[in-house]
Length: 300
Ligand SMILES: [Zn+2]
Image 1 (tube, rainbow, N blue to C red):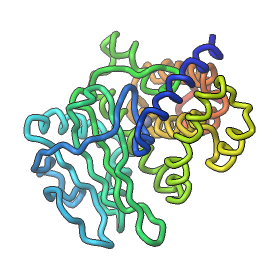
Image 2 (cartoon, helix red, strand yellow):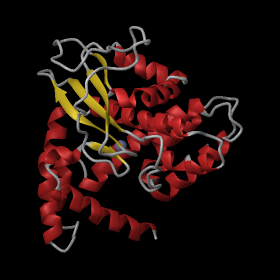
Image 3 (cartoon, protein in one colour):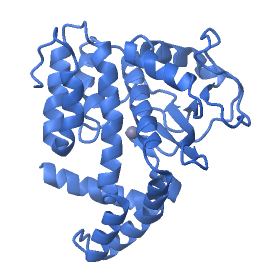
Image 4 (cartoon, helix red, strand yellow):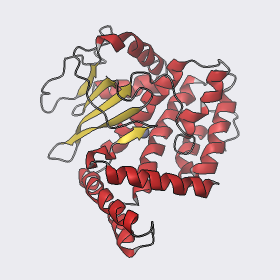
């Protein structure tokens, strides 16, 4: 079952990569598409002190980073609810502050109407020293709804039964998706620009061959391409998504720490990771283990 599903997804993803322009290699959530900066204007979170830089979009001074929230008026109230939820945790506040005071990286957060339940991170730019200086997180306009598949999103998906039992609200899902996207930013900040560019360049090449050779991943040409870019397109993609999910789990670790269902949630994540993401289990297990002495969930 697992193999069949993965093969099917492989084809879907390979098709996606092949059909899509290279910049769509951006990390995505659920059925999300490439972020499109909303045309709108002013920023939100006026009450947030130095934490966020709220200038309207425009040229950013070099050597100066920060968080820039570009939220259309019609989305401001819901955005504030999601942001407040994210900032209700120690880890959410710490990560927010890190980017708000970042010396170089300008992280823009916006809301895109074209992808209501998803989110996406992209528009990366690096400086001459190879340091990430720009990234954009585009949240869906209804990011507080919609649970992506358990195969690639074991953390976000695990929340679904808890919402249906009214143990959590949509804002927790939205904040978890924000955490997932922050995970993408953190991961890409540690990825050399040259490797990212190489992947953007070679993934379509890989997929063109893959679709014309009978889907044979053992093709020596494909093995060589995968070696050059650090994995085949699906491996690259799932590694990115599971880093996003690891940060989503970090957020939930704090968010549900005092909830009586926290072990149930973590055990559900554990079962899904074991089923679909066994090769990536370590990054999730580390987070589970960091829950502290007062927790006794079975992830050991
Ligand atoms: Zn993602």
